[in-house]
Amino acid sequence: MKKIIGSLGVLILVIIVAVGTLTTQNYEETVLDKLRDSFGEKHIPSVDHSKFARLQKEFHSPNEVTAECIECHNKRHEEVMHSNHWNWEREEYIEGRGIVSIGKKNAMNNFCIGTQGNEKSCAKCHIGYGMDEKGFSFTDANNIDCLVCHDNTETYAKAPNAGGEPLATLNFNKIAENVGKPKRSNCGVCHFFGGGGDNVKHGDLSSLMFEPSSDIDVHMAIDGMDLQCVDCHTTEQH
Image 1 (cartoon, rainbow, N blue to C red):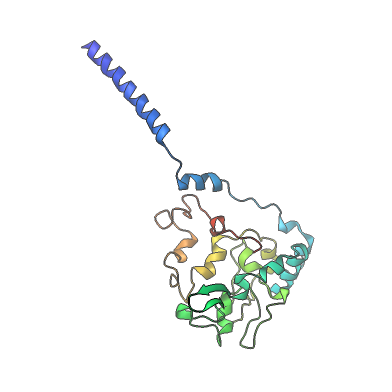
Image 2 (image 1 turned 60 degrees about the vertical axis):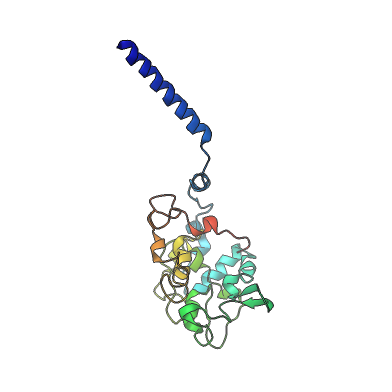
């Protein structure tokens, strides 16, 4: 009996070792594993903007903040003014029409319909200030809204029907001293409500994505990898 039990014990041990070895050899790193490796360490800002003397003065308008931004981040405003976010259009190929410039400027957009005649309201989702039915200066760098994408306080908000201007009650100094890499909240305030309402334009984007659980999004889950939009949606020169 003891010999049988001993033999079974040895056999079980051999099986465990064999299974462990085979499992290790056959394991292939998954996409999620690679994402964990790539984004396991959260982004640490290279500078502390609250230490900059030029950002500690009192700001009376968001345009004044922009003027300070481009003093240090020179040439970045030129990149922005060549971007789709700024121009509301990009070149696309349409069969039968060839290459055309298309975007919010001249296209129908779900419940939003078109921007023409409703510029002040539509500009709530534009990275600029001062848009109305009379037009907008796409060449004035001081009209760029740096804060809507780079505010890390999560307090910045555009005012309704104000041509892209932010709420007048905001503390621009606090926001300017706490800018950084865009978060989901920066992207989502426009993209989660694209087309005129929550979850209207994109079936996989809604206000649930601000702080999703893993059953909503396995990548952005706050109880998981907590990825930000820009971790995957990267770009160069804005």
